[in-house]
Image (cartoon, rainbow, N blue to C red; front, side):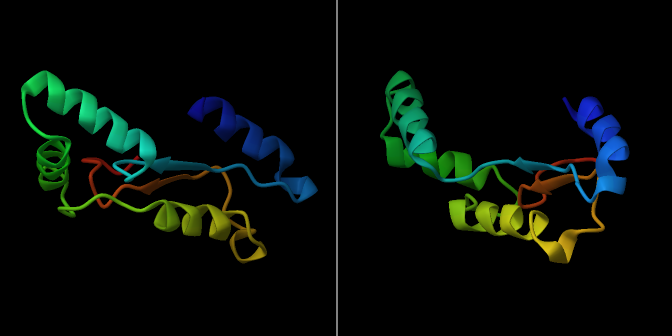
Length: 100
């Protein structure tokens, strides 16, 4: 998908259309809470204990919020980012090990 979006971004930029990918990592959503409950049950621990363990494993020591992710999406979709094209933008609290 990333390669397709990069190719597409080069084909449509002259028409004023940008194509970017926003890549979330650990964001605290209803799905995150649901999987913590399921995984916690399998491990014999509470969902809060599972959430705490998962948070402590992130570099930021916390989950991102939907608002933080949404703010990046709002920016990248705005006129202020009109020269940003073909980018993979991580909203991951620095969790990714590489640059690409």
